[in-house]
Image (cartoon, rainbow, N blue to C red; front, side, top):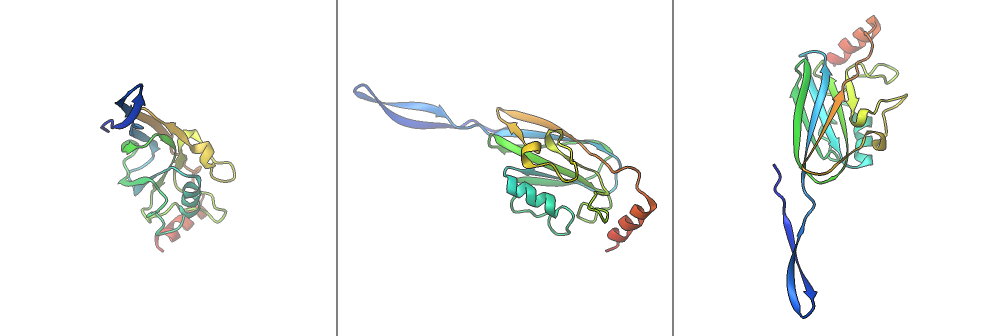
Length: 177
């Protein structure tokens, strides 16, 4: 749990000097629940972003191997997948707006697999219930304001419809690369 910090400032009031206690911006814990993980296979990747460019870069790089160490990500986690729901808490975030990206790397190859048209083959989701339409939602669409002692959000993973035999071949080929 974050501890409130007070800043002392000296102010002149009348003829004397008085110390005023002014509370600093409180750190916030963000609870993120990933819902609808369909299997125990692979890993669930979650990234929290505080700026639009970092978020946009993460969306662009999600299908590339080796891009999970994202220097613009505020905080992130990778955990073994467990079918159902998983909750994690990101502690000590300053108040602000955050966009959260989650995906289920079901074949455990370190990226979000896509078909030839750039459509994800694995489960994915965004904060604020933002859903893609022809491209990933913008930072503004996915951003949630966080303030106070604790914020809580949930992200429902969206999986593509039942994969075609062609998608399964592509997924298998990607897994073996």
